[in-house]
Length: 214
Image (cartoon, rainbow, N blue to C red):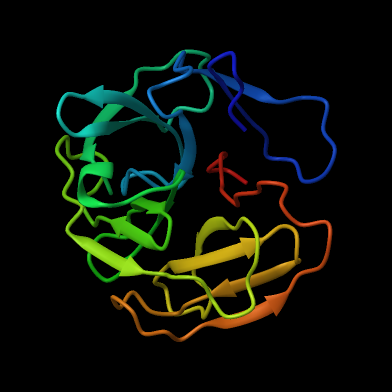
């Protein structure tokens, strides 16, 4: 989890744990916020990496984003790698709503690396450009829409729901206790699967492996 003090806290223990690792990023506030993400950003390593997406105002366009990440979960302030994400789903093109970010492997046959996806309203923009490449390219998109029966706010999630090796997108309704997801990356297949996960739902959780030896 990412604190308002600019520190990314992480642990390899499930359940209550008094001891957490802490990695300094120092990014706070942002133009429209800062967003914690985690994933396998370096194909040469077996552990997941810690990332924080910062936002700033880009004159004439609105919010622009950059990913800062490290795969070193041991040192308190390791060197960060930067990927420029650019302007995503901007107001100037008719998009609106809160930004949400996550990471997943959308082309497992190519590189086995997690890359960034951004949801805003009913739209998702995502990329297969590895985070180790400075300039990203969000040339892929999906209209996730709103599944029938969903009401209230929903949380954007990414995962391999059908065990085919490729991640895809889903929405969790914290007030209803339902989870809707797709098993494809098509623009708008309209094919949702849903599951009742129960209440309370909505505590952010992201599965990852911080320690390569466990």
